[in-house]
Image 1 (cartoon, rainbow, N blue to C red):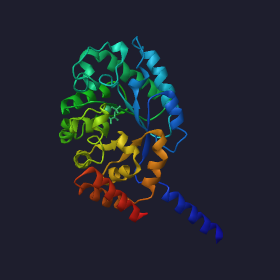
Image 2 (tube, rainbow, N blue to C red):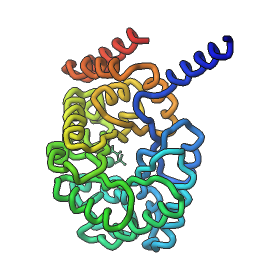
Image 3 (tube, rainbow, N blue to C red):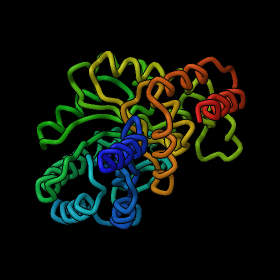
Image 4 (cartoon, rainbow, N blue to C red):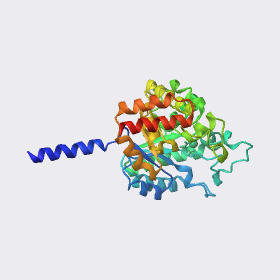
Length: 315
Ligand code: PEP
Ligand code: MG
């Protein structure tokens, strides 16, 4: 009767509101976490822990870290929470680490490379995250930034697995690790692509230099082809792949990412709704067709225009 018709109609609407892959939120503070929980985000795809420490002059104790992480994890939107270990260096100096001046900081000691001089801090962070995971009862995934070789990924995985019971992964933001994903088979639970840095290192274009915006445009074909390889190689290695760089905050680009084979995206909070609705308005097969269109373009402008055109025909 009428009731079944209504139930059917409602379930159809509900289905069409489901994105083809989960859309998570990027956060960097307790305030961000609380705000992200007011969106429909499926958990957090990037918690930038270094943002808590940009003006800290003394090393935070394990106790202090555990308290801060527990509050942030507890407030986060429902779903897994991907926490990035400290990504200090380059554009993000952290006072208590007393990092030496470098001629080329983007190519220097940053992210996971800090393990050489600051192993104790990394261990403190991993142990504190485990305590916060237990205290909050949340599902936590932990990843290291700025990994360049498979050996670094394996070393990090070993250290992380000996420190806690979270899923363990790495960020893919250097071309060198993008070429080595096959070596990670069976060793990692996930990877997450940082397209901001991946673009910087792929195009040899400083991300802080406003004059290089054209090279850092995520619609550049070389970036999209590298992303296709990353999604394929991760799948072959049995490692779940996502994208957390700014590119995933562009709804049309997020459809391309889903079509390339990524299993999740993470967007800035203000873009979660728009990305969700784009990913709810296509099927996976349609997204794959759109990704094919993107892969066949030979410059950024044509690529974006062709994808928008393909999407308009679907809608
Ligand atoms: C990235 O590089 O794309 C990324 C997500 O990390 P961040 O912007 O913090 O370097
Ligand atoms: Mg980065």
